[in-house]
Image (cartoon, rainbow, N blue to C red; front, side, top):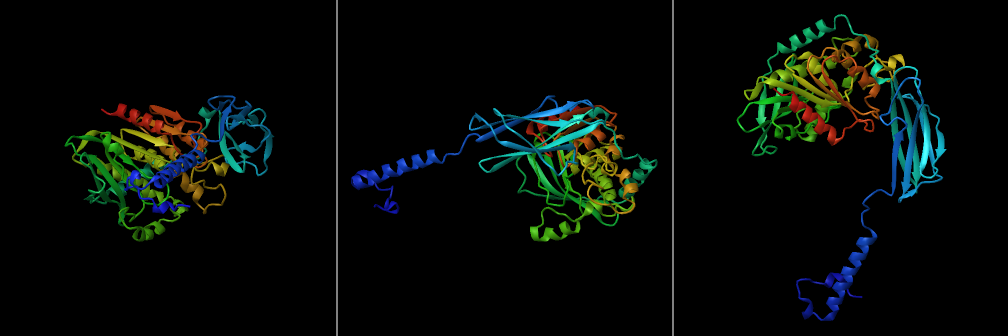
Length: 444
């Protein structure tokens, strides 16, 4: 047999005799056959769709909800395959599973009902050729009537007025370091370090701004949970914003090497419960006040247009979006996505609460029940004075839709709700586009 490695395509075929020409032909035929045999499929072999008997997944309390799974295997209706499922109140599903069977491509599951406003959930799975398909589906009952279970402290306003005033006694002393490696001809990217409170409390972030010499609105983006490195983006500055995204933890400079970054990242470990026994020592006190100071910094920039100030973020960033807008009167619009830290005593009272899910699986430190109302995003939502674009999905098992509705329903200013029932703790690109269009309409 001829060795393929001896073939040299730089030699003309007619000079090497018929053997090399035949070899090339065989090689091409083999390649085409292999390509056809192992070509990447253009769609999934098993395709399924979950629907509910109310298309918007909204029910009244007392109504029975049912979902239908429609599934196909290679275009043929799935038949005889078992579906295992659990149904119950959101985030309180039983251990035991029930089952049903696909018949002519469909399987129906009764989700049940609620007598009080809130959500029911169904966790389902089925297997085809050893591959498991899993999904989580939630439906709402009288969602507009969901109210926070966390009380509003009588001294809430005074407590936060004092915290912000204390933070403002520390000069921001911004250190702005240009980063050409992230910049381009139209957008400048820089690393920023801000002193946001007493005791050396600092935050690092990426500042991006258009290079056109014009005045622009500012947009602040607080981060999701954790202490991992943040990354710069030019997306918002390409839409005309001076944009700042930050890390909330002391010393977490994203430009450090991974080895250098490990120490401040470890130091932030467990922050969401640190100091929870007392409202004055809770970790989020300096975080909330520090985010307000970030807005002060943006409004000090010479290229700010002097009018428009936005805040946007998701999860913990969604929570901090609402908090920042409530604490800093300079904010003129905000767009939170699936905000965390809403209705923090929900689990304490037998209903799904928001991340970090205090009292769900553990007893919190003594004093936590008195501390958390001062940090509950639902209480900040009551204080908003600017227009709000609010978005989340029903299938979120990190920031429960019960908790996010609890915050949304107490907002009294003009508000726009973009619910995508099929999304979880994430968002569709189309929702980002919708939010961007909404923000542009807020500009003056």
